[in-house]
Amino acid sequence: MTSRSILTTILMSIAIVSAVSACGRKGPLEPPPASVTSMPGEPKTATPPAPDKRFILDPLI
Image (cartoon, rainbow, N blue to C red; front, side, top):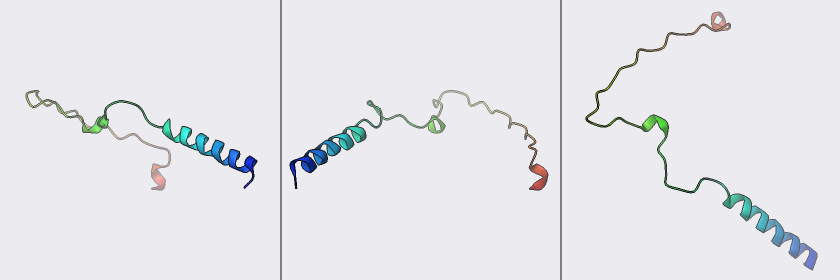
């Protein structure tokens, strides 16, 4: 290998490692919003289901 190809390989490796290491957020894990539950002592309130919305392509289905 020539010195130019070695330098290119090293620079590409550094660029890839830098790009991959910047993914995500630093901090503790957070549960998804759907899995959040209420405290055991709190009363549970039931929400009525939302009415169906009509869509222009509904007759085709």
